[in-house]
Image (cartoon, rainbow, N blue to C red):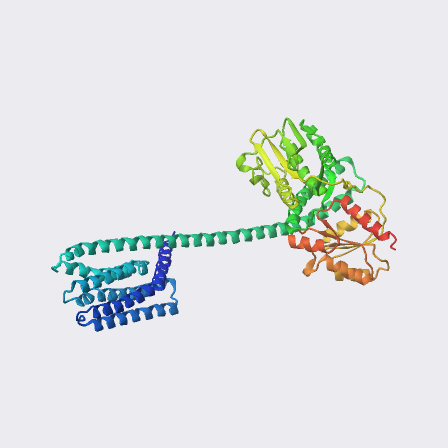
Length: 587
């Protein structure tokens, strides 16, 4: 901490003390002036001759009070900055000293004739003024002390020279009152100063927290933007590579060449897995994934997941055990299956011996559970494992051990479904993940099982391909031509319009990249081409974008949206479905 920081903090506290002084001080100032009026009146009507000079003293007190109040008014009009507290403090203290002196020797002079009752009355009023100053001026101690000592010390001194027996007691009580009033003012000032210090510390902490929150939000936005940009730029060549591999596989080649092509295809598939995981995170963050709640039996989902991982578990000599469950649940069957796939995949991957058990328990709802006898997770890491790219025991980032996105996707999907996921695990003892799924309370309506597209004959036709990457145009042209289609490829809408102008055929399908050059996007290109042919031509968008806002915009367009890198099987199935739909008779 620099030396300027404590000084700035001290200035803030002093400025608040002076502000409180000017806020409460006028009450004490006005009260003292009123007390002076009553004192002079009481002395004048006491039945004895009025003290000499009382009008002059009263006028002096009134003028001092008026000037002091005008100073307070000027302060509030000026609204001084934090660092400008010193001249205002000095001015207030000067008036406090003047008022203290007026209540001291001059007030004592009013009782110069030695009347005991007048002396006691003046002493009582002066003492009350001093006690009130402990509250009114206590926020800034110099203002209080310079009123206290001149106001009542003269009475203690004068009592030592008076003949009345009670004056000896007064001479002892005056210092007692000075100590008591000082202690009261010091204690109040200390409490007020501590409250100010805590208040400013809280304000500084809140400001620092807000700054860190904004920095974290900016970092998160920057991270998302970086991932989106990097993902898009990396997906383009991987997408082209996948189509080139597909085109190569259609050509005859020797065994060694086919093995190399298959290895390239495996690497492309691994990249595809990474991009799909990133895409899942982006789609969930963008809010474009909407649950479709259905009532269905959980057993087929469990059986399907376990069946898919049975070969992998058998290869590792790990028993994968499924306990049958007859429960009917009400949730999204696709999303709950995705959650279970991630959990079972992790359990099989991180279990080297023993078994993985999948089953259900009836609790408040249905608890779908995945148990394993793997390496376990330390208690202090239970929250961290649900963060993106966090992995235990994989500092070298070995891809065979996963990407560190599975549990992050589980966390987001479970939050979307409202299904709480809990983790019970001890290091070296295995882990248990439990998902609370809502039970259905009414009749069963089975969810239609997902049907995988079978390889069949695909109707051939004219396909328009719009992509600003020349490599993707070439790869797509080679791949689609190998499937028997005619292809016209272009890098923009204007270029495509020029090429189709000399083609007499009506296109059967439009395939466009979502983000094109010069701010153009695939949605606008599809709309323009449909307008050109005055027909609702089937179309699909292919994108490498993972930015949440772009995903949402593409989702809302109503067009089929596929993501790069795209496998040849998925592309062929999508083309077949769109072209078959367009060829069906419309009534």
